[in-house]
Image (cartoon, rainbow, N blue to C red; front, side):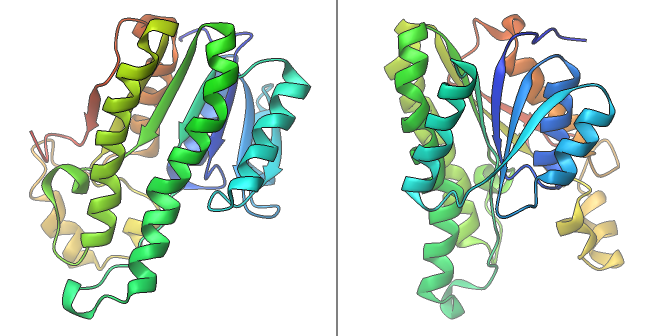
Length: 246
C-alpha cells in the first residue's frame, strides 16, 4: 500500500462512484480527505472512511460556483495548514446528438467537467507553490480520447481536461507540482448500470480484457499518481480502460 500519511487530499464529486472510491482509497493510504459534494451527499463517503479507521471531512460545495470553491480551499488551508492533493472528479453528462443538443446542456457539462477543474486548480496553486509541492489529478474519460456519438459536450469537456492539464503541468513543474490525468474507460458505476444489458454486452465486446472496469481500478491509478512514487511523472494521461482505446 502506498503511504500518503500526513497528506491532505481534496476530492470533488466524492459522494459516489469513482469519486467515492478515490476518497476511500486515498484515506486508506493515510491521507486526510476533504470530500466535496453538494449538500450532505459526501457524508456517506466520510462514514465509510471513518468506519475503516481513516480520516475525512465532508464539505458541501457547488463546483460550478467559484466563490464556493474558493471557500472550500481556504477552509482546508486554515484547518490543515496545507493541501497536497487535488482530484478533479466532479462530472455530469447531458447526452444528445449535436443537432438536437440544447445550448444549456452544452454549457452545464463544460461548466461542471472543465471550468470547475480550472477553478479548483487555480485555487490550490497558490498554497501548493508556497509549500513547493503538490499533486493535481483530473479524471477525464476514454471518450475524451476517442470521441463518442451523442456526447460532443462530454467528449469536449474531457478532452479539454487533458489539454488543460498538460499546459498547467508545464507552468508549475519548477515548483515540484505534478499535474496528470486518469482516463477511465467503461467503469461499473451507477451511470453505466443505467445502460441496457445489451449495450453493456456490446461495450464489453470492445474491451480486450473482456470486462468493465471497477471503480477501485481507477482509484488505484489516482492513488499512485498522488504518491511519491510518481514524483517524476507529470503532464501524462494514464488510461484505465482495459485496452478499449490504445
